[in-house]
Length: 441
Image (cartoon, rainbow, N blue to C red; front, top):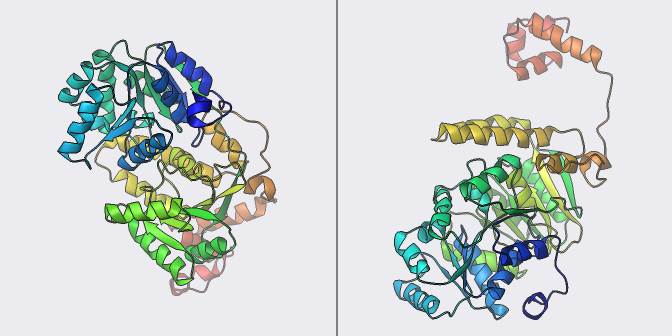
């Protein structure tokens, strides 16, 4: 099936074990990095098993890409989502009754409707695959309420194996996925999270737009630049365009048809660089992305890992560049804290603290990243900014004493920037008025 339908000569790490477990009717939890081949873990069983496979997918664009890909392989698949007319949906329902399809992609909201569950119960269902399974967990970085209901599937289909798949889950999230989906003694496969061809790089953010332009002008091939807001996306895309760089902005504020055109043009190499919010990228299967640049600090290591995972899927060298400014962190914390759900806010703040620690790390970045996902590594990777240009240590006792002495003389009552200005001897009006320019420090 692997060779004749999909054209591959051999399985990637873990695929055959997962497929064998599903064929033995065992629940599965599959943790594979972005681009690691998760889809084949349920697509091949879908073709080998007698009935219909239901795939739960969170995004319309993701469903469309997957189904389009399967149709090119000659596999009968369809998706049901809110973009379809009632007539289109009714045709697919009829096709399901007539055993016309092997895979149906559906959003969790529709899947859990009683009318849809009743329809499925009249069919032979062989497998239920939950893609982006971290969405089911409160500990996941992309929690969605509709995913929580999926735990009821085991009650409706007790004999049907359920497979959860994700590229990003720490230990707490993995345990919670199994619990929330009601997986019974699941076969768990955890692939390596290491992508050795991606170079992790970080620079201090100071003139961010100029830094981006300078970096992009030195690159060859495709790239994605992530920003935390739509306005930043628009401003940066405009700045790149003014420099004659073949780029486009992408965010949820654009019309759906415009987003579709931009996404298609990027995949077909008509656009070199996409400047985007996190709305872009899930399900993008483009092998020749040479870099992913983060204009702002992501809100979690999971988000960061998922986004940089869109680079270098062809196995060739690629770069993940993070612009880091510690001043951004307090703004992001404030933003997270303003959420409506205090319990969720606490989880997100905890995840952001890990991302902040990654940005401030003085040890091999790959080591920090892999350790977060419980893939403990003692060796240095040799392919990150810390390994290639290690931070230089210096004897800082006297400097530290001066700082503490100055804090004491300022009666421990000033902001850090004011302290820095005094230590540097800046002749600012406020400093002179307070006679702090006369301090010995």
